Every structure is written in structure tokens, then in C-alpha cells.
Image 1: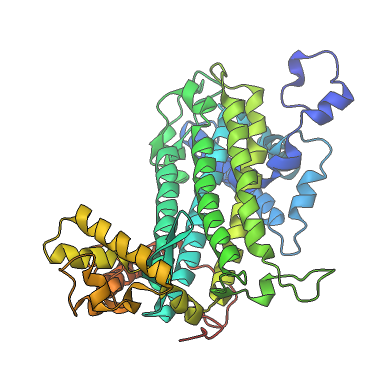
Image 2: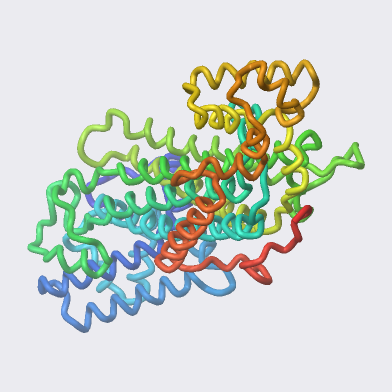
Length: 488
């Protein structure tokens, strides 16, 4: 029996009936649906619609439904999807409830609408998955931090415009990604905070027709409070779009990391060795080790961003309040969540196993005039205005290029043709160590500043892990990279 069939005389067209159903994807909301139904039963008990015994029977039946869904043999989802009568997860749970407790199960829908049910279920889903993804961000950030600790004082070139710029500590480079991930976690926190209001009691559009105590359901489900406007509550999908945009940002950051690793693994750079467990070979060229994981990560942003774009276009121009169009917002959310979850889990394991070639990195840091900025700063300390210092060092670089050497390969007499300010202390000032330490500002790559950054990152990651839980990556020792780092 349809949940709405009383007013209709003619049956649905069979093809349309199958086409309009959502159970094939909203089965993923069963846990949220049973939790929300238990909360609604509490409100019905308080309103005198259910007595304590009836409410307990309904709660027990809902617990049985949830338990079967989470059966250890994994058959739960198939049990739900194979149901030929239910058109959505709400209908499925009602059918199972009635099969367990008889007509008492029909009483549960008193004072509520599927419009508020799906709005509540989706908020619960996004809230739990956002917290889960925060935990995965914490796990990946921890792996980056571990690599940064092992790298110690190892040096690498930094790049702007994909041209060598200045030397930085390898740990400074890795911590840049930690900062991105911690921002991503904070965005998910923002999403969770804004969505954390309970739509139950909003009815179909105008509010429940019973005097339900909405604070009961809000408290039972861990929401901050009931929603303030029933029309907005039943039609609001802003939180889905915010969530997908946050996932897009995560994917963008993952893609940037993946692109750098893909480049750095090439023979032209040779800064990293790809772990074989996350690489494949060529069917034609026997020597190849391809960066499949990072290439796929780079591509996943398209799928995740596509989900956000889909929901954007679905919501565009929708009149208040609920419209069936909103059913189409669910699949993009489910898909993007799964892709992001898998991607972050694998990136944490991949980062743990990544081998950094710090010998190659250091060698690359000692050519290409990466100390030119430090050289200009040397002249500034000698009283030369920066614009003039920039010009003098630029002339010296051009001279060294013609001679085929670096700045430290020039004799003092050669340097002094560009300015009398050059003295013997110039060569110490442009050494690799001095070049690093001249960036002695908060957030810079001076060694003591990076040490501060490591301590700060460790504290913030620890807070995130403590708040959201530790992800089991199945690693023998989560705190130690598996492979020794070449050159350290």
C-alpha cells in the first residue's frame, strides 16, 4: 500500500512507479531514519498519542530493523533494496515496523511528513559523515607531520611559476599541506554547526498539526535546537551544497598534493620514490612505474566538484517549499562522500609509505640561484635600498650565468664590479643554511620557525584526532614511515 494512495483511483504507470522511487539510493539513510523515528516516537509519547508501552514496542522494533541492516554478513543493504513494495526509505521502515508490531506501526506517522523526515535524515547523514571525514583529514595530516619530523633539516627547492625560487625545509613544504587539511576540517566543522537544527515537527510545510514538543526530538538526536521556520526547514538543502563545496575544497587540496608528487616522482625531478603498493606498471614498457594513485586523486576533484554543481543547478529557482526535484540531491551527496572517504584513507596510507629523496632535493637546492633573495638581503643590511640591491644582484646573476657558475662561484673582485658593498662575509650570508635562516619570521622556513610550526601542527592535529577519533589505517606503526629516507 502506498503511503499516499487514499486519494487516488488509478494505479501508477509501472514504468513511472519504478522511475520515481528513491529506495535504490536512499537506503543509505536507514540508520538516520530509524534514529529520527525513535525521536519522533518520544515526542508522540509526550503528546499522549502513544503510551509508554507502545513507544517501547516501536523503539524495540526500530532497533531490530537497524540491527538487521548492520548485520555482520553485509546483507543488510540488499535486504532493503530488494524490497518491491517500498518506494523510499521512509516507506520501507514503516512497512518493516508494521510487519513487526502490526497496526501500531501506522501510529508512528502521526504528526509528521516525509518532507521533514528526509530533511532530518539528510542533516543527520551529513553531520555524521562530516565528522568521519574530519577524522580522515586528521589521519592524513598526521602522516604528513610524521614525514616532516623524519625530514628534519633536509632542504628542497620551493617553486613559483614552476621555476625554482628559494630553498625551504622539506618539513616546511609538508606542513603547507597540513595547514590546508586543517582548514578543510574547520570548514566541515562550520557546515556541521550551521546544519545542527532539527526539522522534525515542521510537518509537510506549515508545521505539525499536533502540539508536539519539538525540543524532545532535537535533544534526542543531538541537535542544538529545533529549526525556526517550517517552510525553510522542509526545503532547505543549503547544508548539502555547503558540504559538497567543502568536499570539493578537500579534493582540490588533495589534487595539488597529487600533482606535486606526480612531478617529483619523475626522473626530471627524482625527489620522491613512489611506493610500489600504490603504483602500477606498463603493459608495453617494462621499466615503467606509474603514479596511478596520484593521477586518480588528481581526477577525483572533477567528480566531487561535479556533485556540487549538480546540487547547485537542482536548487536554482526552486519555489518554496519542498519539491520532488530535491530527491535528486541525494545521489550526488552519497557519491561524493564515498569518493572523498576512499581518497583520504588511501592518501594517508600512501603518504606513510612515500620515500623522500632528500639527497636529490638538497642537490637541486644548490643550483639555480636560489640564494639570490638572500644575496639582495645582504646588500640591504649594508645600507643599499632594496630596489638597488635587487638590480645589483640581478646583474651579478646574469654575469654568473654567462660564466657558467653560481653566485658563490664568483670571486669577490668580480662581485665588487656591481657594488663596493660586497665583502668577504657575502659568501657566508648566501650559504644554504644562512639562506634558510634569513627567513626568520613567524611562518617562515627558518629552522627555528619550522620547529615552531611542527609543534603547532602537532597540537592542532592532536585536538582534531581527540575530537573526531583515530582512523585505523592498518599500519604496523602509525608514527613511523615504513621506508627509510634516502639521503638522511
